[in-house]
Image (cartoon, rainbow, N blue to C red; front, top):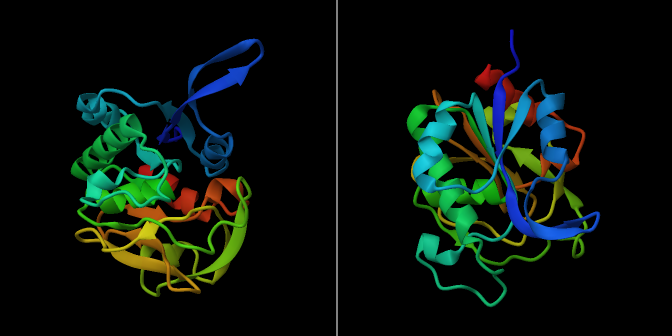
Length: 225
C-alpha cells in the first residue's frame, strides 16, 4: 500500500542561508519528520491563491495546518489586543481556505497550535488573545500535562494524561460550531478539539512535532490511508 500524501502548510518569512537572504516558504523539519515517522509522505503547501485550495486538497490524502503567528483578530470579529502579534494575512487566507476545503471534501485534518486556533475560527469560534503560563521563555518550548476527555477521538489515540511540548500565548475561547473539547490543561485551557465521527478532524494546542510521541499524527495517517 502506498504512503498517504499529507500536505503541511508553511510559514512565509524572510530567511537566510549561505550567501542569501530572501523571502522563503519555511517548515521546521519536525513536521515532515513526524509525518514520515507516522508512515506518511509530507508535501509542503506554501501560501497560494485561496481559490486554488479546493483543487490542492483534492490531491491530498490528509492535511496538517501548522503552527505559527497569531490569527488576525478581525477573522473572529475582535479588536487586536496589544499583546497580539502582527498579522500574517496571506497565511490566514490560505489556511482558512484549506480548512474549508478539507471540511467540505471530508479530507482528514490535523491542526497544530495555530492550526487548531484557525480550525476553531473557521467554524465560527473565537480566541483568547493572551494567557500566561504556556510559554516557558521566548523561543523555548516548555512541557505541561494535558488530560484527554473520555470518549473522544483524542482519548482513543492517547488515553492517558501526558506531558506535551508547548509554546503558545493564545487559546480557544468560544468553541466553533460542532467542535467538542477533547483535552484540557491543568489550568482548564482547551488543549484539543475535534469534530465527532464520521469526520476525522482534530486540533491540538501543543506541538507534537517537537516531541517523540507519534500517536496523534499516526491517527491522521491511518485515516488518510
